[in-house]
Length: 125
Image 1: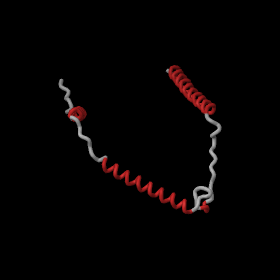
Image 2 (image 1 turned 180 degrees about the vertical axis):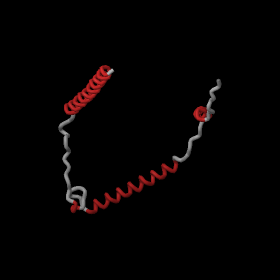
Image 3 (image 1 turned 135 degrees about the vertical axis):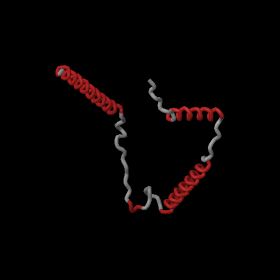
Image 4 (image 1 turned 60 degrees about the horizontal axis):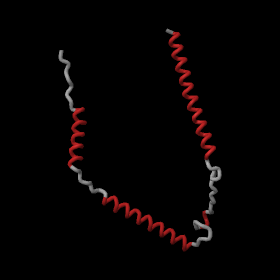
């Protein structure tokens, strides 16, 4: 008995080891493929940080242009919110069901409820 248990544990350990080794090998292969085929030109984009006290988004932009952009952004947000509320109010209408859909749904519901509504059978001897 201990011999069979030892051989079973040995086979299990070998199998699990092979599984983990194959997973590690696949992981290394995927890493290699990603490193070979990625574009090294766009590795890290350069981001220019503007000082906070400048008051504008772009260099050379004056306060009047900035105010117009802020107003345009506020108007776009207001329009999007109004359009979203109008679209949501119009989509509450439920489409009518065809007679085939009604029949199929009622049959599905009755089949589903029959599984839970059965009375337990008694063992008759």
